[in-house]
Length: 435
Ligand SMILES: Cc1cc2nc3c(=O)[nH]c(=O)nc-3n(C[C@H](O)[C@H](O)[C@H](O)COP(=O)(O)O)c2cc1C
Image (tube, rainbow, N blue to C red; front, side, top):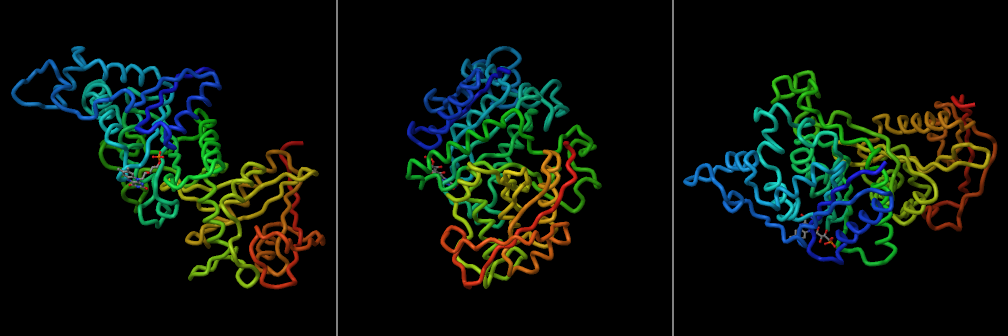
């Protein structure tokens, strides 16, 4: 169905990655038959500063009270025309997409100024009666979707769960929770591109564009970040969470009602997946998980390009942590000629091992396979990994007796450390729910 999409973008350079991705948004959603509204803030020479010029007709000429003048200008029709136009675009939109580079941990000033000026009192806050009755899940923009696309200069590691910058989903909480969820929008998980200043080859740019297109495909179907709504029962006095809600949790983490979610990886996840997989299979530090191949192989288990190829050719299922966007674990899925779901590269982030995540991922894949009518699950394990074979046997997998030669000539799986590696095939029969 045709929808109206508002793209608000903030990058002064037309050849920048951000602006290239704005072009992708316009092309992709336009080709899907949607109506595109654009606010390209630098091109519009948007006035970024919220000041006395925003109120040509004042109720109090002596002292500038922003909230009072904003509410007055809004109800009396005395707002500046640029603000009125942006409010009309927001009201017309079914989805709002914000695209910008990360500048000092947040949005560029011009975009901050767009929010400050367009979000008038009576419109985005103080809605209906001014008592804060309608906010955080309720408000004038309720029912609309919001999606943030940010380009960050720092590498993905800087934004990991223990990264030096902190996770992007937490840094952008003032935008996602404060500016988008506050007036009622459903906010999708942020789409971040890391190392954005070091993208050099055409292949890298194409992979980034493919990752963004995949996110755009889910604009009206992906599940939003499960922020707790003010009026959903979690905040009985509209201010503080009830004692029995998220007990023991504080800060941003407590605001996200559901902590983990299964999602299909898109190309933009490749770097983060490679980091989780290599951490799990090659952990050399204190944490030695059950997916570790120490003594058998070393060198990276897979590179970012290898992950991207798998995402394009097959499918990688992720268990995403919604509190910070980190990947708790992943598994690669291919479908064999006999319909069996063939899994590989099961990995759990090293700092989350022993919490039952591997089991959770296996259960979810088997549930999906059964629902899709697959007759059985199949996988290969290195024969020498006896503990891992035992782990799978406890979960209903049997050795088929079939063995495969280890791919000694394929450098992409790592460097073998012994000459006798061999793969054994394991299968589990499924009671498919589809006949
Ligand atoms: C003023 C300014 C502030 C920046 N702050 C950050 C920052 O806080 N974190 C970060 O990872 N990168 C930061 N960067 C790097 C930009 O995010 C990076 O250059 C940009 O995303 C590259 O993409 P582009 O081609 O779309 O400009 C900053 C860049 C500028 C110019």
